[in-house]
Length: 236
Image 1 (spheres, one colour):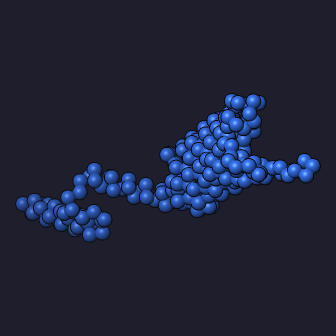
Image 2 (tube, helix red, strand yellow):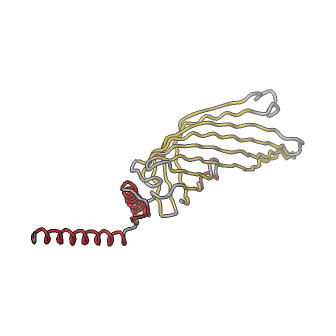
Image 3 (cartoon, helix red, strand yellow):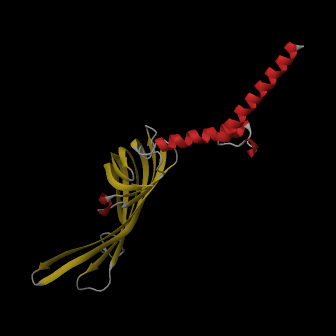
């Protein structure tokens, strides 16, 4: 009888000790006992904390940037000036380049006592959608390959000195290219360098009165040319 009594006391003390331990853990746990969380909720909570830690540790490597707006100084010559890049995954992104072109030139001369000349004004735009794959899986930073398509539209207005009216020629171009490059990211500044090859096809459509009796339709040409680019951007 004495042994049974001692055993009951031992069981009671063990139960009290276990209950105190559980209450102590609940007091310092981020999930309260009466909050309604299940075991699955607790697992999900821990997963979220791990993902948050990984994201925090990735800052400075470029993985947290999802958008890049870039300026291409070479685009001031003939092509795209502004690019917007959007990250789709760790390895992939898409981009759109846009450019507006406006330039005016003059050609003058004399023939005896006669002064002649022409004024040329070019206006138009470029559009270049592209797809980019980052081989190291750290978009938008690292070594990549890029495929792109390009569309160009220009209007050439010609004014002849000493005459009224103007002539209008149309220039359109389509093409595509494949380049490889590297984009650096110093949060939030980016530097993008690339090079490769591109195919371009241009078509000129002349004004019916451009050179009457000589050029009445248009002309076109196409070919493969080297492609290269440089841009400076802002990532966010």
